[in-house]
Amino acid sequence: MRQNTIDLIGYIAATCTTLAFLPQLTRVLRLRSAKEISLGMFSIFSAGTAMWLAYGLLAHSRPVIVANLVTLLLSMSILILKLHYDHNAVKEISGV
Image (cartoon, rainbow, N blue to C red; front, side, top):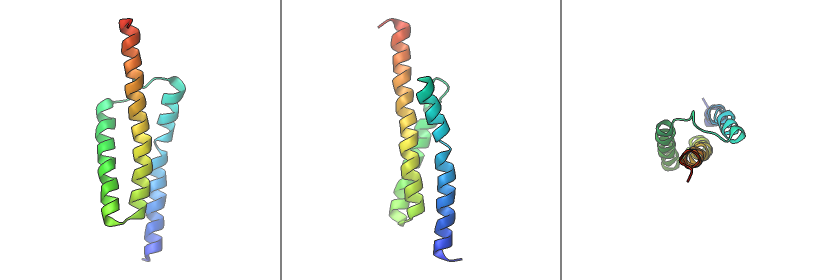
């Protein structure tokens, strides 16, 4: 199989798995709530995605680099919103 075909398969797979985060991010932004988001899961996932990005950079694999860079940005956005909204919820409950 030619390298262009292999890369195309990688880009299509990357697009599918990366776009999967958009509905969750949109929901968190729309509801201004991330209480159903697992902080542990998104922390571990983001760390793993960062490692995949490092692997892609070291292996010079553009599909892996692009997919994991965009996925890391999306997952970190959700993680930051989780921390922001949870912090605001704690302040609201405690009256501080």
